[in-house]
Length: 347
Image (tube, rainbow, N blue to C red; front, top):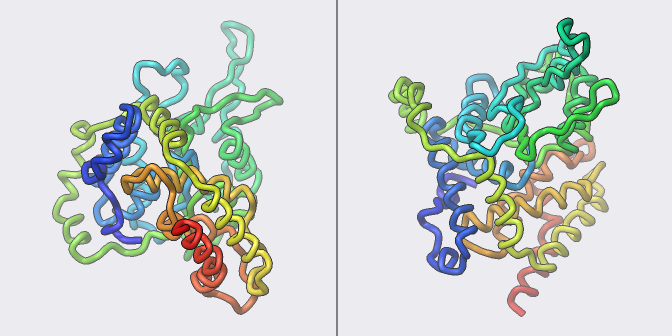
């Protein structure tokens, strides 16, 4: 996927807007505002920005992987700052954006929160950790111990944390952007498969093109001071957009059949040691709906599958020793189900 594939909401076909009852228009405006705001802070990353917004609206999490200085933190912070709490927020302990710098000596309570004794009231109260935010940047997540990673697993999977046998709910919008550097492996704890399976997308951020890199150098001061001038959306608007797209964008049974057949083909392929989970397909469905909405459709098509499937399955599939071309493995196993999907669409 490249920047040319990224659809701006103001370019969507009129048919989508005419059909909408107002809710879809608002949802598309939310997507448009998020895209425009983040793009002003992050240059040359239109494809990654789109995937991040798809994951946010689809209620998923993303893992960004690349070398230091590639813009991972800037992207996460820009998206977090584009969302404000709004007037309806009740729990003041939940803020729009928080960053956690993961280190080997970090404790689970450092991210979830901890009971603190108040000598005035002679009682304990819960001090909320940095997970209590709309958008959480988990920086260098593979540098923390498995004990902390397990705490993140509950938060990402169930939107809650458990401390001293008491469960505390996280915000409905809770969205994790985790980063890791694949080259510097000293002192790291590789993420286990259950942890990786909690991420909707794993995105490798390659070097931006020459023109974008020159633009970054030329405009860094202006972009640094942009925060107060950028458009924002509220938490409630994002949640409404999520619900609207879920109900208004249709997923045909043929689409689901193709996803199941691709998954089964991968599990039976001798080149694959471990196939993808059923959960991965469940997580993929709302992402396909958001992708369709961004492209002006009220239905999911084969184009959405081809656009997102590698991003969803790339970090979930374990290849056999000596096999390294995940693109070819996936392409071979997609061919027959996608052909069948095309035939069913034509008929």
